[in-house]
Image: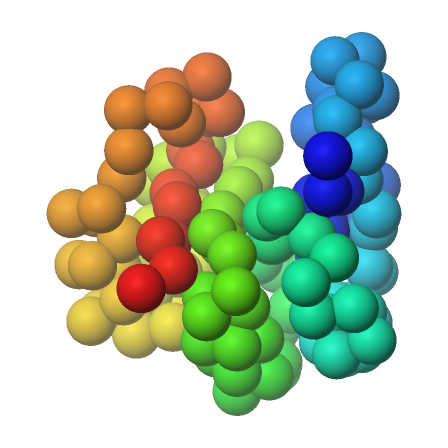
Length: 123
């Protein structure tokens, strides 16, 4: 099983969930770090999980580029423990209203266990 690449400033709650159920993962503590790992090993991850809330202010362009690049290779999930409303506001600020509308429409059933999770599908 390919690991999940987690892009988060902190090693968050979901990390212990991954450990409990045996899902391999790697944490990149910055957008640049996640970009670097995807460049080094473009086929090495099954999913990119990003916690965008507050941690990546000022990195909107880098986050857009990371998302667009990763979506060509794998699903991308944006996640926060702070709830769906705040996540939606952050997504609008970071990626723009076009992306938020797309995300709302594409939200799959299997994310209901992740409070506030929104998934982007690779095209």
